Image (tube, rainbow, N blue to C red; front, side, top):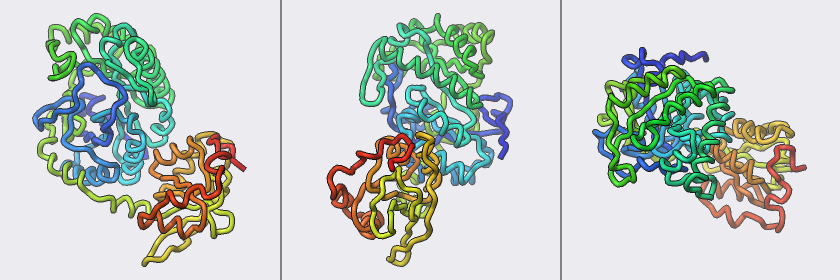
Length: 422
């Protein structure tokens, strides 16, 4: 389906009065700490990034999307902008995008990130049809960045000061470049912080333009209580407008930003976050029945159809099992993607098993396990009868008791390279 990318109100001012957006708050965790950000407070009348009246799981977000479109059919964009960072919550974000792609393929899909954790998911972003991505980059000098960010987290390691700012900047620059290589429209958000980066922010614009970014959004800092920058005054038009004019020589400037909440919904000039707050909270309490209905099956790696006894990587096909009227039934044999194509093999396998809530294997490597689970397919290492594993998945049994009955096979041969574990 060809989508009209001009219908994104944040990237195209001309459509801001007729096209709306919804932000789905499915990403609570963040991988950096900015000195102007406090996500603890929420007032329904407050509009700033990081604020939301609830957190949704992917299946809840899909239900909420249905209700939003019923109330406001002018919505053209579904976005994820927090309240943390999408790629500190990649599994939830990718699954949400997958569900939206299935149910509402006509929508434009948008993500807003600090860029720290996005690089491993650039191909996923393109494959899911995400057309617009915003990268918040407020400095291109680690010395200045160190004043803006308290810390950045890379995996389980926390970096502070210039070292952390340097790592973050490297990821941001690579993200913009990689997104443009994949045909994604890129906006760079830059927070204007008087006394910190106001004399540097035009340089940010120049670097963003050199990387191919499409538009820059200079956002005046909004002082927030209980943050290191709480005492910095919000810059006015006398500061912002000259900076935009100077930066506009290098890159188009956005001038109609509303500093949207992580649960913003409606037109930019007619936000309905408050009126839909109850709907959001109701959806956040939904039970996962919808997930079970959308993923009714379990995949099994087996040689003869009786035991779970194949490593994920060596399985040429998977048996697909379901449950009906209290009995397990074999639905079909489904071919696995061919080996030899690296991590892309596991992404392809996740697509092959998109209607499966789990896959039972004798062993699995760390990389395929991570990629499958990011796409909503849980991997369970078990040894023994298929029926025992199915019973544990469908009825909440003890999967741990079925694991590792024969010592030494728990992933030793499954390296996760995608080249087969034969």
